[in-house]
Image (tube, rainbow, N blue to C red; front, side, top):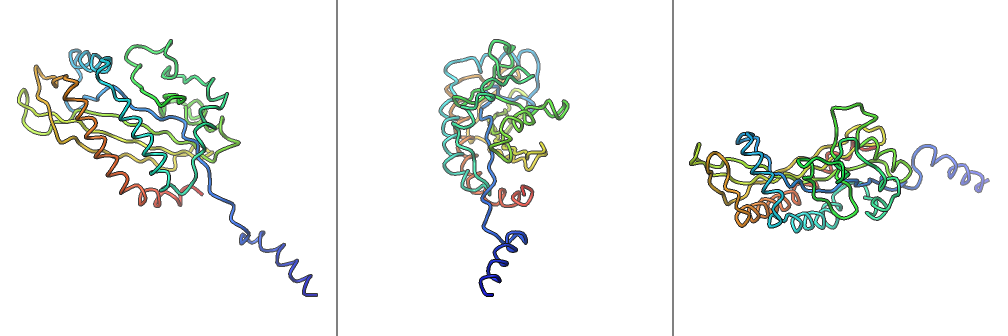
Length: 254
């Protein structure tokens, strides 16, 4: 009789939801990049400004790769511990044949098809530069396509990127002092292509450059350290804040 009661308990407990834990959800990080074009929204966007920014991005001395590499290492070795889910091993993402064959409808994944202005995304090897594409039909968005590709392996997909913008830190007009503001954006979508969270954090460089003819001084020896400084400040600040941010979002990803 005791055996029968014990057997019934084992059969009923899983049904009631008190069985063994099912394990953490899994998420595929499907894009990881830094945008080489520094935003000028706060300063203007005339033809001269656009030309100056394009020239800077194409300058081999303006090398953001070390910054991207540090961000990538920090993300997977430190930030990942704060998430209430596991990240798929990167090789399972970048080695997926459907992923490797995927081409975004925005053209950012193909060097041959990209316009000069669109060749702005510096990626970690194996990753594709993918933008969100919120203004088109849901079924055609990059994040939706990624969900379809990794449906059997992951419960959601994540986009991670860093970019920069010039920001006025003092003075006006030709006497303005301009700094660099670094941004990190981390977005997660579930299997229904619904956004679970969007983390947007930023930090500003301590140093500044001046303006000449309404355009920031495009000196890579000055701007690159400013990007590095803003990035370091941002990564350190995010390291402290991410656990709380991730904890708040956990309830949305059930």
